Amino acid sequence: QVQLVESGGGLVQAGGSLRLSCAASGSIFRINDMDWYRQAPGKQRELVASSTSGGTTNYADSVKGRFTISRDNAKNTVYLQMNSLTPEDTAVYYCRANIQRWARWNYYWGQGTQVTVSS
Image (tube, helix red, strand yellow):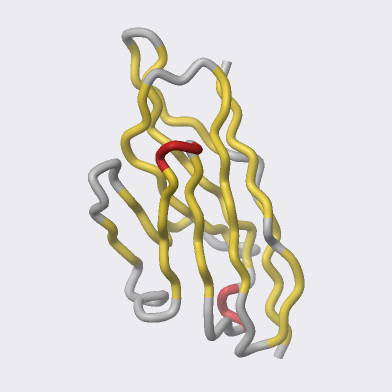
């Protein structure tokens, strides 16, 4: 069994910063992509930032220059540093990981963490 547990969300004023963490645990053989998504009320879930095990990262245009995704592969953990937050960043943030267990690869999701940015 695999679990992804996010932490670090909360309420912050516009212009502030938050750092999200997502730790994967369980019977994990290998992890490839680890990504952050978000879903605002009434909107579809969208990809915010992605990272490969080799260190390649990509960002949504809306967060480029403000958000940074990073990983600690030894701890099976991915982070999202969010700076210069705006009310438009308010959403539930989810991490997703592509994990190999035994001979199979599957995507797993965390439970989500709420980020609220006040104006």
